[in-house]
Length: 236
Image (cartoon, rainbow, N blue to C red):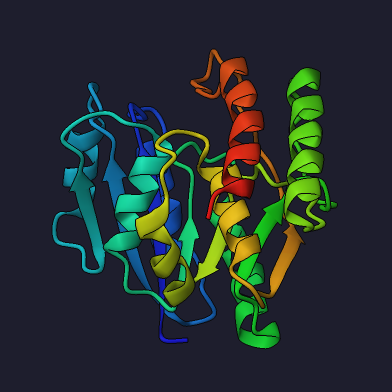
C-alpha cells in the first residue's frame, strides 16, 4: 500500500469545510502517503473560495468542480474516477465521521487483505451523538432489507464512512448510476455482485448533526433508497 486517496464530496459546507480539510490533511494513515480530492457539487456559498484558499501551496490535495449540482453519488463517482490510491476512503464534509478513524480502517486492508471496509456506527463503543429515533429505525430497516437482497450481514449499510480497494472501486465506478444518496445502497449491491470480495465492518464514533446544523438527507431519500436497493440488486 503506497497511497491512500480520501474523497470529500461537498455542497454548501462553508461552516464546516475548513475544519474537515484541516483534520483530513493532518490525519494519520499508517505512514502511507495521502491524496486528498475535494469534489464541489456546484456550491452556491463560499465553500469553493475556502477550499481554494486552503489548498493553495499544498501538495497532494486538489479541488474538482462540477458544472451543475447533482448530488453526493455523482460527486463521489467523479472523485473515484480521478483517484490513484491503493485504498479509497469516502469522507463526508460535515465531520459526522472523524478522520481519526482512518488508521483502524486502513489496518484492515494492510493486515487482513480487506477489499471493502464499512465504518459502522452501531458496532462501536466510541461516542455516538443521540439524535433522531426515526432515522435510526429507517437505517436499520434499510440495512436489513439490503442484507436480504445482497446476502451480506452488515450492521450499517447507510454509513457515510466507506473505504474500498482502489482498483476494485475504480472498476465499479463507471457503472454507478445513482447521483444522490442512493450511492450507499447501489455501491453495496454492486460490491455484493462482484464475487469473492472480503468485506469488513469496524466500529467508529459518530457525531451526527441536526437539520438546523445543516444535515441534508431527508425522508424522501430513505424512501428512494428502498426502491434503489431492489433496483440495483436485480440490475446487472
